[in-house]
Structures are given as C-alpha cells and as structure tokens.
Length: 191
Image (cartoon, rainbow, N blue to C red; front, side):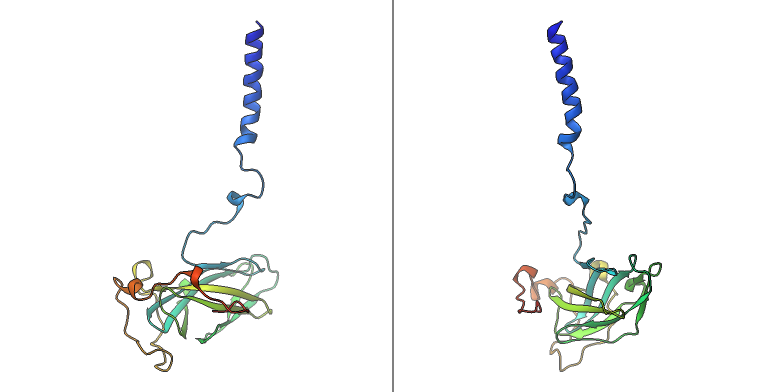
C-alpha cells in the first residue's frame, strides 16, 4: 500500500510542477513583437512607424513605404518630413491619429532621391508635426519579386548618381551586396 501511495504523491507533484517548468516565464522574447522581414520598425514613440523600406528601380531613386500608427496619441499630428544625409524627399503632410493610420503602400509611397542602391541601409529621421522624431535605418530593396512595380519615383538627378540604368532582378544583389553589420556609422549614428 505504501508504494502505491508514494507513486500517487510523486505523480501528483509531477502534474503540479509541469506547467511551471514548461512555461517561458514573464517578459521573455516570446512576449515581444516579432517581425521577420527586411524592413525597419520604430515603436519607441507614441506614433509607431513600421515596415519602412525603400523600393528602388535604379540607383539614386526610390519610393519610401511605411505604416504610421498613432494608437497612443490623444490629438492627431502629421507626418511632415523625411530627412537623411544626401537624401531628398518632398511630400505633402499626412495626418496621423488614433483612428487614422497612414499606410503609404495604399497612398503610393514617397519619392526619395539620394546616394543609395539595393542592399544599402539608409539612415533617416521621420519628423512629426508635434516635434517627435523617429530614427530609422531603412533597407533599400530592388523593385523585384514582391516589390515589383512599386517604385513610383522619377529617375534621380544626374548630379547625384552616374549609373541610372534600371536594375535587372537576377543580378542586382551581385552588383550591390551590403551587410547592415558592416555599415560604418559616425558619432551621431549616421552612415
């Protein structure tokens, strides 16, 4: 009778401890937002900017896409600027509010020009009307595969880029390899 009782106690203890031992605990990586994609996200402010990418059909020009969501703000603000070293982006402000996200994929994106090519990572700052600045390191992807026909920008200024021929999807990464780990940043975090 005693062995049966010990077995029942051991089995009961095992049943009670298995959930505690098999869980991940609190505030572990499984509780965090996970985005597996070649895009930049900045969720550090009350307006979140996610999915940032530049789609480029030729060197020096491209179209910036992202989604801005103001779920934590009480008063609407506007996305008013996109700045970076040797980067030109002119656009009309987009209003961002609690119930008014801005999805640039639906809006046609923002034409940008500068010294970049697919495989590069472009440091830039997205500015909001309320004074908030969102620091970004945006990947540049070729206008191929899932990004086909998304670069709506005109060709760049010849003074910015010498080679303005459109890319061929098969060879673009052979010509412009880049690794974000090898990107050299200056003291201000700008490449």
